[in-house]
Amino acid sequence: MVQTIAGENNDGVARNLVLASGWNSTCYQILNSGISRWVSADQYALVGFVRANGIAVVAGAPVCQLDRLGQTANEWEGYAAGQGMGVCYFGAEGRLREHLRNRAGYTLVVLGWQPEWTPKSFIEKMQSEPSLRAQLNRVRNKRVTIEEWPREQAENHPGLRLALKEWLQHRGLPPLHFLVEPETLSDLRDRRIFVAHRDGEVLAFVTLCPVPARNGWLTEQYVRRSSAPNGVIESLLFRGASAIAEAGAEYLTMGMVPLAERGVVEGASTPNWMRPILGWAKAHGNRFYNFQGLEAFKAKFRPDSWQPVSVIVKADTFQWRHLRAIGAAFAHGSPELAVAKGLLRAAAHETRSLIARN
Image 1 (cartoon, rainbow, N blue to C red):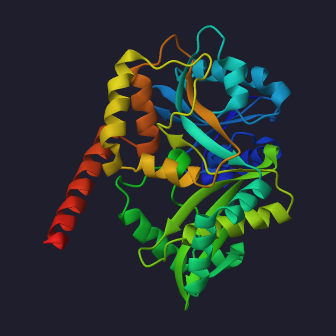
Image 2 (cartoon, rainbow, N blue to C red; image 1 turned 90 degrees about the vertical axis):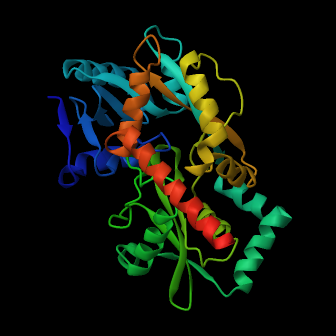
């Protein structure tokens, strides 16, 4: 019998499936609060989704073994249709893209690109790059301790909470959810967390969450306080990569850079109505989210490769309603209201900066 699992108290089946078969880099985010979970009739496949504007916005891709992907997609899409929902796979990567890109009735749009490494190559590139070595040395010279904290120490730690609160206050947009849920500190069961501190004060932290089917990890959050020295995030990433390399991990990604352009993807297209929106976002989006800075930051670690990340809709064209549904999934409500709040934040920040300069 097909079932929907929803709610934090019923995530045991979903968690087991993610840890057994999660391949998409964002697979662990399916366990975030606010995400509904559909499980196949035989209990061997999982889809995490948010219902928004009559569309099921899927968190990445179905979680299942590769040889079951087609069967799972068909069963899931049948369930969604029976519930009166369209289907939009947000954050689809190679497996689902290869499966669906040439099929009639689907449309693929590239959202951005994500960098990928083996942990071993990530460490080697940091050690061989003079500017990155200098960052590591700077943090050591500032007497900052970089270490991994166990779950028992880190969960709901007040210093980590304070760092997260300060970091969120300086973001251009109100806190987003769905695949970028900021609330991770209350459940670190399968995550690893690396903390920078000095004289008892938490300065920054990085969380990693598992990508089990690739024997790898996603750098989920990098949070720093304004008092943290330059290079602290680089130092945390180096420590994290070293730890997972020692444990035998084979895959590491920092996640997608939205709007990045790193190549042409066969079967992908951008609708004409969307081009001005993307152009505006590239020109003015930095007041909300520094996409260019994010890409430059990730690129300086010299990725082994960049891989496209897409949205795939079960429709002949990607429409405005799909974009609004995606925005609503991240905003937990009206995307227009989230943008309005972001504009107010940006205006307040620019006003404070102007006052400070004068």
